[in-house]
Length: 81
Image (cartoon, rainbow, N blue to C red; front, side, top):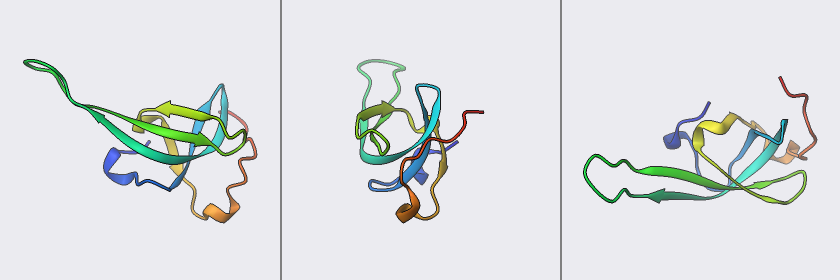
């Protein structure tokens, strides 16, 4: 699993979407601040599913592993484990 400090815009990661492990590209990192005492920041990522081209929103912890060579990121589905 990824930590937000390891994620950068434009990187390709593997993420589980609808039960399948697919390659996704990070489009933006969104930070929402809380509104009151004891509230925490919530960080979400805007992702693009490279297999279908659909936009996906996830937290950084949903990312499984970084794809080592983005040129090989065709978006082909991998078996879900």
